[in-house]
Length: 146
Image (cartoon, rainbow, N blue to C red):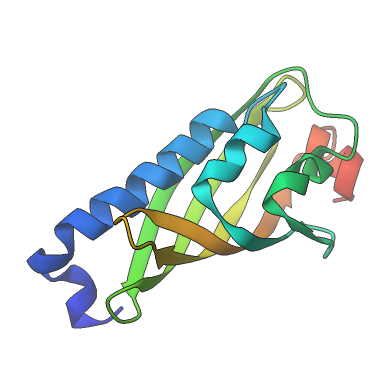
């Protein structure tokens, strides 16, 4: 972490990035409106799924591979934001996912690159979904292997 990442002058940017992450957690649930979720991504954002498949933001439905759980909640537990100049930031967010099949179902981190837009919004431009572990009988293990 760099000293300027904790600088008071970046408090507003830090709050805006954190708000995007919390919005994602709220939207990434069963029967998610993946097209609607695209508002937190840049137009040309790329997302790498746990199996290495890369998709665009509007193709995020690929994450469930046609078989989403009937209940899922994502809980962001820790965010580390490192600013890369005035309009870019790298963010690592640790998460735990709870499903109707296991609690916890899977856990890991999202590795995101954020870009500040001309209107002041921070959007995800690049995401890598990392799964550090999964319950053997859970949804993630069934879809992506354990």
